[in-house]
Image 1 (cartoon, rainbow, N blue to C red):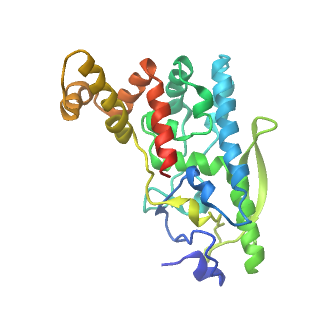
Image 2: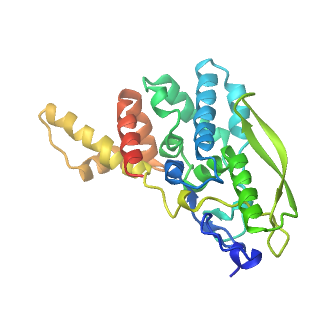
Amino acid sequence: MEHFNNSSDSNDQEYYNARLDQDERRFINPDLFKNYHGVNFDAKAATLQIKNFLADVFALYANGNVKAAAKLLAIPKEVNATRIGYGINPSKGRGTSWKILNDVMLTVIKSDLNLQAVEGRIQVIALLAPDFGPDRLSDLITNLISLQLVHFTQAVCREEKVKMPGKQTIKYYDVQKKTWKEKVAELPIDNSGRTIILIPVECVVESYNFSAIDFVKKTILTARQEQLKLEGKKASKQDLIKSEIDPLGVDKYKKYALENIKSDPVLLEEYLHRIGLFA
């Protein structure tokens, strides 16, 4: 089992020491950027990258410029150099998908949701988009902060005197130009010659503290029970799942969540606030 520390003589605890022979089931959680207290990772810039990207995408949808929004959402792909992801086999580069995200973005824009409350909360995509699980979300985040991760990797390598003979073309989002750009980055490599991108250890998680199921059960169904109570009715959450959610089929919790925020978008704001507090 090969790790970065094994191949580089580095023993720094600032980065997540991922396996190099296969992807690990780990993800990047942007809510944890605030927990980074080192000097090599620009957590503030990474946070702004995500916030500005979502704001730009929402603005394009709001203005009816769906084609331009599609160009922004279609770029992100899986970044294999981080060695984190969902499977145990070599990565196949699923990345994100504009087709998956389009309906969600349109729903959010057409709802009465306070966009300022969700612009920096990229979790909204994973909560509502079908076939968009933790791996796709982490891929999107990795793409958006790729420049910050590369700078972090280079800073760690310089400090630890680790050579960087590898070259990789990375795509990064230029917040000033509001477009994706490319840059050739010098990076360390593993024993097979594959490039490595390091991630601050504080930002890596085994699982996210949010999900569509959690959103539905803890926020939406609670509100639904209160609504029924005002109507003089009573139903357990399990009864509601059986009668209102199960018939929706595949991705039933996300479909249910999407329909409910159309009528009561505040539910999403409440949930995003809650998971932010406990990250």
